[in-house]
Every structure is written in structure tokens, then in C-alpha cells.
Length: 72
Image (cartoon, rainbow, N blue to C red; front, top):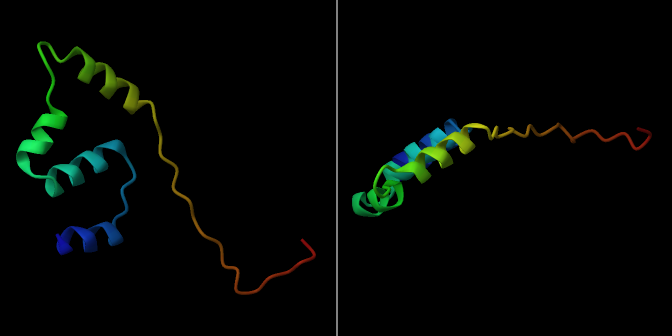
């Protein structure tokens, strides 16, 4: 698990696909399969996947605050 923690620090998760891949690597196989699986034609999974594709995660970048100017 430490390998994935180090990898996460270098390459932050920026998409739903990234979170899915990390979950697949970190969760026990049966648990991931249960969460990933669907019944019958997997209509709900398809719909959820389509909806998640519409979501865009924003990365937040920190600013240097070592020198503050209260005027602004």
C-alpha cells in the first residue's frame, strides 16, 4: 500500500477514472467487484458512468503567502 500512497503524492487523482483505478488497486477484489458490478443489463451503471463523465474536478493551486501585503 505504501507504493500507492507515494504514487498518489506525485500524481494526484484528477478524474473519476483515476479514483476508480486507485480503488481497484486498494480494495480487496471481491469488494471492488461488488461495488463495480451491476444487475441484468447494467443500465444503472451505464447511466451513472454517463453522469460522472459530465463532472469535472477542479485542481486547487496554493499561492505563496510568505510575503503578505495587507493593502490589496
